[in-house]
Amino acid sequence: MAEELSVDNDYRKQKIATQLLKTLVTTAKEKYNITMVNGTTYNGENKMAYYWYKRIGFSEVEDLFLIEANANDILDKI
Image (cartoon, rainbow, N blue to C red):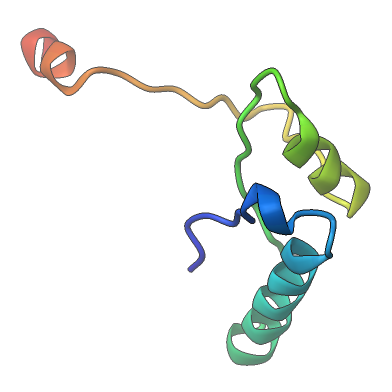
């Protein structure tokens, strides 16, 4: 399972991320017979990654929310 896909700024716009993702998905299809790919991307000021994923076929999942909490806060409340 891939945890993170990123390319150093010095090597961007060389289709490296595209080739990495293509290899990952191709291998996963062959080895595990996957049918879907999901992931998350940072919604910061520079949405370059978001638009790249959208351009290659990813779409937002309407009913999915990313949530987080401080571990100490959780332990204090449960």
